[in-house]
Length: 342
Image 1: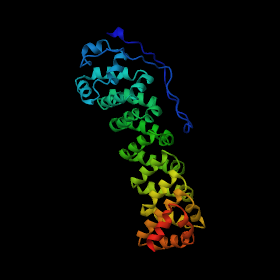
Image 2: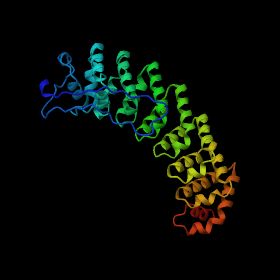
Image 3: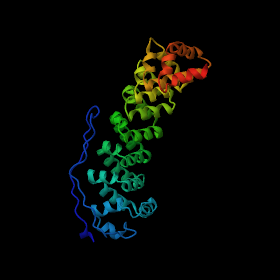
Image 4: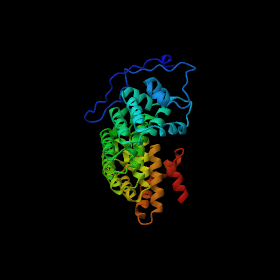
């Protein structure tokens, strides 16, 4: 049966850690290829037996980790529960022996789920997996399925290994935050972080680059998530970073999401509205679709805020001269609001 499987080719793979942040997406791994097992090739229902380990090969392991026969995690979990520490380490050693091989399995939906089941079993096994994750960290954390391996690792690894993971996250935080899958992983990691020191360090990095992230298609989700966690220190730091840019953010698609969210929060609402009232900036917002929504939101929240009625009437006073032109504009939310309070 072993003769029916083709040979895997391995190549050395390391992820260099450079200063700063990568300006472009990391290249796909090269030098690794796998030819899948031919039709009709099957494994016994319980492949992780003594005989299996006697003739263990990368081809077999790849199949065990990625096959679709048992998509439910329960059978695999039951199989590995019967393994002693020596066999678990042998399995982990083979899975992590080559970076491209490990990454290919981790990027597979089934492979990712099964690797996660192996994490937290023993410190020796976790050491192998932590090293494999760190070698290709950026590829793993920004992949749809592989990112769950990193998330699981952070949840179950010991303090030393967690710190190594957090350090890597801090190094690449801005790149991860602006990636389609990375932003989701980062949000989960920040939300679930049980290390206050690294949680605050991540908050600081995000707050410091709040303008960049607020205008990004994926980074703005990270800013939104952090704001919703209601960490007062981080929220204040974000507001400080964005101060002076609320008008520019309001007329941008992604930036307007952040301004709208800040308007919903009592601590930041006053700062935002006071900046909008400065000079003749309101007219600029009335002519923009996103700015129009921001102004309407500002009117609604200040109308409900009884303590600072001056902010509401300040907006009304400055917008009133534009009422008639706004009524002639199709779908003007501000005009509709004025009509509702007349």
